[in-house]
Length: 106
Image 1: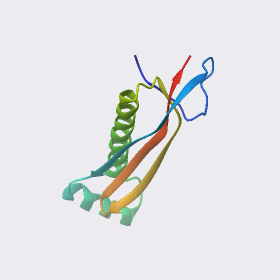
Image 2: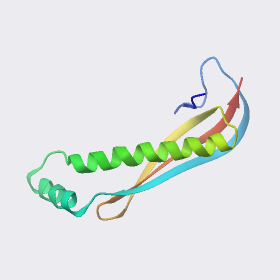
Image 3: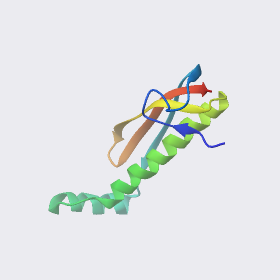
């Protein structure tokens, strides 16, 4: 069964029958020095730094998957109220945290 994940507090057509708790998934992702140098040069001339866009997309996917795995361990059928938070932990590294409420529905 595929875990339903939503940013809303409810799921149309379903009712929450049990709240299992808050679940988290996090990932700190870095890029190698060569891409970091190219991204630094890009900041001088402007434009999108694709290496950092890829870094954040990969970290977001990993954080989401870890959150889902935590919810599955609790026996959840869905995660509601899902959100992301981010922080720069060091130069060239980004932390993405995915969190939400694991629930059972009917």
